[in-house]
Length: 226
Image 1 (cartoon, rainbow, N blue to C red):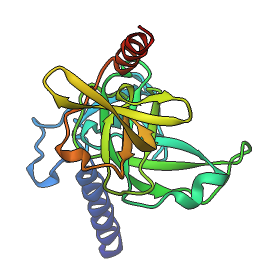
Image 2: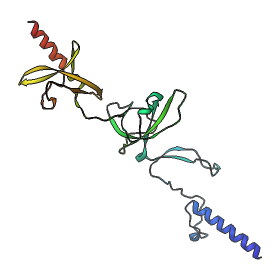
Image 3: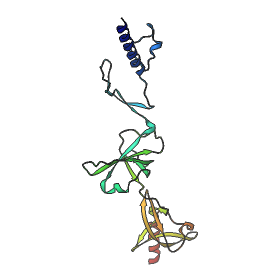
Image 4: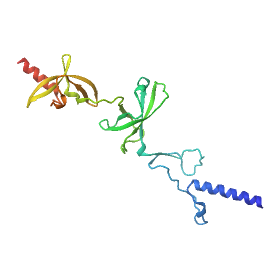
């Protein structure tokens, strides 16, 4: 009898632990509170992206019943080719645009760089967004620009720079309605902005034509021919 009592006690303890795994307090159970269904609470906030079970299906402990998405922790996976991997570091700033809405830019940071190369000689770079973006959904296609270096520079809209002959110029205001062509050295262009520098003066204190600069160049050429 003592042996059977110990066996039943161990069995009861085992069942108590199993009930605890699904959130049921065995001590609060009575013959009137026992039910055929239980509520399974998710460990994270979010929404269900996939349901892999249906009513009446038998499942194993290793089966994935549901897939959950936490919208506050959506990240972007980028493909970076082998020749560019040495330029990528964790923490670098990333500008992401989606194929559906290329005019909207989202900021992210490089979080993890894969050390395995795929068949196309590329590796996956995982980036986390700096803020929650409810309009982003899992599975979206995106393009991204990773800032591999950071330096201060004077920038102007790309269309403010004109190429005439072998040199680049900005139209700098000398007086209201009067402009002159200022030679500049152009640097890199990113997101519609071009880095410029000039030995002929401080560009920061100048007013320049920022749009339709080629129209101004054509007017200047026509005036010179008259």
